[in-house]
Amino acid sequence: MNTLTRRQALQTVSSGLGSLAFASMATQQALAENPLAPQPTHFPARAKHVIMVFMSGAPSHVDTFDYKPALIKNDGSNGGRAGKMMAPKWEFRQRGESGLWISDLFPHLSKQADELCLLRGMHGDQPNHPTAERAAHTGTGQFIRPSLGAWSVYGLGTENTDLPGFVHMGNQFRGSESINLGNAFLPARYQATTVNPGTEAPRPTGGNSSRSKGKGKGGGEETKESVPNISNSHLDLRAQRTQLDLLKRLNEETLRQEKHQPQVEGILQSYELAYRMQSSMPQVMNLAQESGPTKTMYGLDDPATAPFGTQCLLARRMVESGVRFVEIANGGWDHHTDITRLEGNCGAVDKPLAALIADLKQRDLLKDTLVIWGTEFGRTPHGTGNGRGHNNKGFTTWMAGGGVKGGFSYGSTDDLGYEAVDGKMHTHDWHATILHLLGIDHEQLTYHYAGRDFRLTDVYGNVAKDILA
Image 1: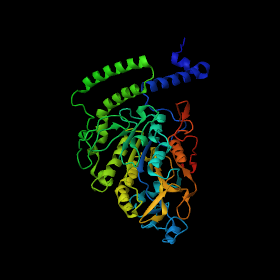
Image 2: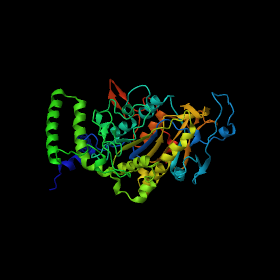
Image 3: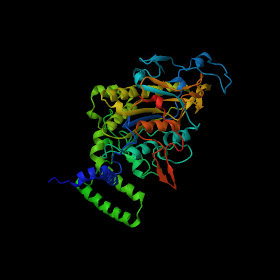
Image 4: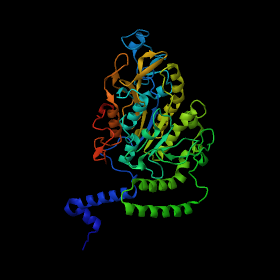
């Protein structure tokens, strides 16, 4: 006589509803034990990881990715605006088989034109740097809200629980780092861990951790010593485990007595993550494992490109190791008074950006990794002396990999580049599209706080489905 096991019974009785209930309970139990465990998406994801490079200070779109023949033709004319029209100082050319117009400021990145999806109809609400940066990261310029990276890890978890789910490098914002990268009302485990290669240890953005001033080794090679405080010079791993187990029992007793204590829960999880990171993070940060040609490709042999190149190479290593969301902030892009400085800014990031895309592609990672080049707003076609003014009405960002069309231009500004007129993409639409590529419905990704359900896109946002591959 054949007998059914309990698992078989659950799979067959009542059309298998028992099995579905069991699977749901198992998922809930797994998340309770490890809130950063990978979670199911709302629909099949096109991207599993995000590398976001944020150019803080607002580079000029009409000098880089938004070709405007009319602006060149009207150079020096009044144009009925606040100042005289100022043509770009660098030539634009059609690049790759797709023929995308990109300026000579990006000779290396231009070779990856057929991987780029240019979003030329971007616009936002905020005309000043700090609030516009906040809106680009959190969806609002007025309030403290969770960042895009925090929402992504909250919705998806991460693939390697020995590493942070959300990592930030660069620390060069015009606004507040803790606001742009913070968790706000989400649990503390979703905030960014900031890593400054060769200078500082990983630390939670919003925490009160001490900051070491230890120096790393040169040449872009990160070793265990270049991440100070990640190793414990007083206790070995077994003694640390005993110490952490005691702290865990004491904290859990506090939780039993006082029920909901998110600060205590966050401390428990941060201690455990820090313990696991002692072996995993130094391995990821150790660029000695990379070949000489790879380092040269990223520009680590040139002082001008080495800092950003190191960050890009580390970003690739992080997503390769399972980190969900990596952001690199690169500052100094405010050219309000002198547009000629744009050449130096672009020169520092051009080769590393091209290498990042090429390296991800050759490792078969680009199809699963969404690379985003973003900023807070654009610049005016008219001059402000020798520079350009703020322009939140129209600017350009781009994406590559992760399920977007390559060699594609979406949206446009008017003939002079003042205002988005076609394929308009507000910051909310941008966020909704990024979440969609990660398999998340932005309307369903919510968190209940202060009596209402909050989301990254507030009550707005349309997915730009025309850019999907």
